[in-house]
Image 1 (tube, rainbow, N blue to C red):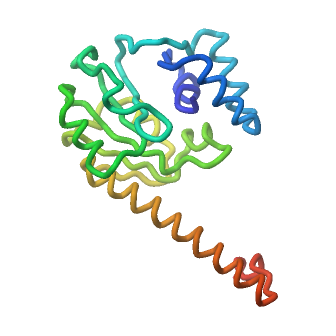
Image 2 (cartoon, rainbow, N blue to C red; image 1 turned 45 degrees about the vertical axis):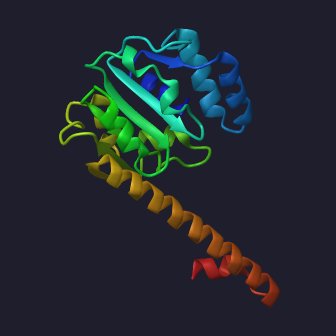
Length: 204
């Protein structure tokens, strides 16, 4: 939803292939993020974002796979025009995104993992990502992709490589963040037992 809102803010006409009830459920879970709710309703009312039940002919197709999206087999890839530029996002086992891209007839396929999204700041994270990782099906696929160019314009850092390398990089970043979180939680517990204020330790 944040991606659709961000694309609409760039003046794009966006079709979201999703059930309205499912969208309503997601928005209900993010009531604390008033920006996403307000912008979604605004762009839906103006018709810049529309909901559809099937993938239509388009210049760009952005597909979210894995935990919060669909699986690769849920998409009727054979019905998508061979000239459509495809962006894949989401989380699959390392190598699966690269294999999917390899199996597609489309050559202009890129993979963009959302390692830059911050809780409650989805739209702002897209507007100015700290770190943008882009995987290419073939060298040069990112060239001419206006959506990725828009993402890159305000990115703090950008790295482009083959899709499998970017998949591995994403998993490494996620594992590192999980390890850091686990470590600081353990240290906080130890600090409590020893009567130390962990907040003061963090400022050192």
